[in-house]
Structure formats: structure tokens, C-alpha cells
Image (cartoon, rainbow, N blue to C red; front, side, top):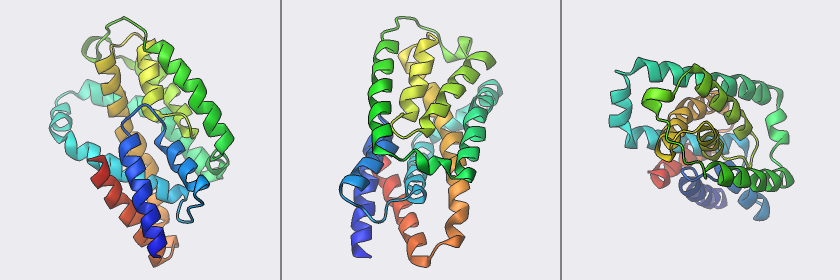
Length: 220
């Protein structure tokens, strides 16, 4: 059991560092777990780690999020932009196909390919802004790109920033769009998985809760 807590500590640290960079935190979690043969690693643990990051995001940006309640247009657009990921993610989760993607070879290729795509997309010199240029069409396109983040090795932040840059948004607003889309994405994944806590042992549930707490601390 002590070994499991050590593994959760290491995974939480990795999650906290990698979640907010355009690199796939899920990929890093899987790679480290595979290389060092971590026994505590699982999809449920990974999502617990992401939930910790989500809570840190909400807590850190609470003022900005509170201000958004007065901007219903942006909230509605973020809702529609999240629908593609929620639908496909739910299907992959319920069918178990999501587990088949947790493969080192897939991770390696996806990391390489989408790093190159992001590099070229970020060379854009256009300056579209959320306040004037974000509409239903653009948010749905970004939302469709976000589906690719279900593949380990494809960074959710990276792919949404890439999509926004391709659509000619500036770097700052591309990052804002990515941040806003992260909330329903991480919340949906957490809800689906944490429902299964009641089906696990008390010891395993404790590990998930520790993962959430430590991930929150390292992410914040």
C-alpha cells in the first residue's frame, strides 16, 4: 500500500507539471507507469489526477470564471464546443475502446505528429479575438479537433490551441479558448469515472482521493 502512495505522489507531480503545457499529460502518466511498472496506474486514477487539475484551474481562475456569468454568449459557445468530445468520449468510455488507446507506440506517434502540427500552426501572425470572432462555426471546429485529445499522446491543450491558431486566433485568446473548453471536458470525464468508485475497494477509492488531492496541490 505504501508503494501505491509513492506511485500516486509521482504521478500527481507529473500531472501537475504537464497539464498546463501543450504536451499530453495522459501520455506522460502512461509512459512513466509503463516504464517503471506502476501497479496503481489505471484509467480511473488518471481521471482522478485530471480532476485534481480541474479543481486547481477553477480555484485559481475563480474571478475570471465568475465574470463569465455575465457573458452568456461565450458560455453557450463553450457548451456547444464541448458536445463533440462529450459524445465521442462517452462512447469510447462505455465500450471500453478508450483502454485500447493506452499504447506506448500510439503515444509516441501522436506526440511527434501533433507537436509538428502545433509548431506550424503557431507560426500564424493573425490576431482574431474571442470577443469579436468566436462564433458557433469556429467553436465547433475547435471542438471537433478536441476529440483527438482522447488519444493518449495528443495534448488536449495542444490540439485546441492548434485549432484556434489555424482559425487565426492570437496566442493569448487561443489559450483562453483552450482553458475554457478544458472545464467541461475534464468535468465530464471525472463524472463518468468517479461514478465507478462505489464498485471499487475502500483501499482503491482512497488512492483515487489521494490522487485528486495531490494533483490539485501540484497543479495549483
